[in-house]
Image 1 (tube, rainbow, N blue to C red):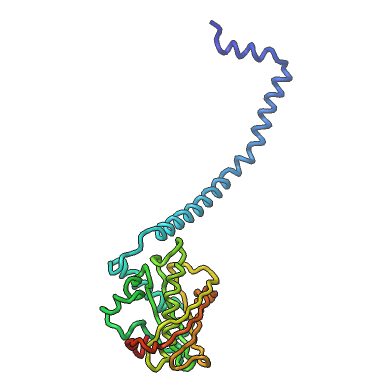
Image 2: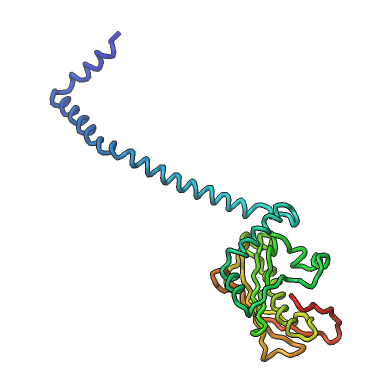
Length: 265
């Protein structure tokens, strides 16, 4: 049997010396040319590690964000819900520039909504009952300017108000807007009560859930009377972008006896 070394020797003998020499030169040249690449290899791996860390961090953050968006909202009254409400209140108190500005303005008076109602009665009202909690209207505050007959409401719109994912339902927005228009109108009526006769909404930009928004509502004093009140409202995000425009007509019914809402909101 022929040994493998003899086979290799026979194979090399078939080529001239120059060919074998040139083959060695090629190998030597390739080896020399590869040295600069080898010196750059550590920096290449460093870049890969940096990019991997960046995109890994972004991936984890995006995953957590998505989990929060698709997870079921906290049940009203639960410990998780109470903690969320506390955090929403904290951000409202110290994290919103418009709140600090309104609190410094002596023409605006800060009020809670439904101050005239007991906790039992609040559970029977849509926005303070079924839509309450961090997943719904997590916060509603009213700043009233009696000189200008204007109110600015700051609201937190939770994930339970969504129509499409991350988007607040247009009907939920209409409910919040209707109540704010009504607050301005009822403050104008001597009877301190009234109902919606007409409501017109124009949606200008998406309204995203899990965010604060402001509702700027103004009474049209020239057109309003003791039994009819015209008001307009603008919904804006924290950057001031206009999201919804609305107008409303409110009346005091002639034949229907309604309870007085009271002096507050």
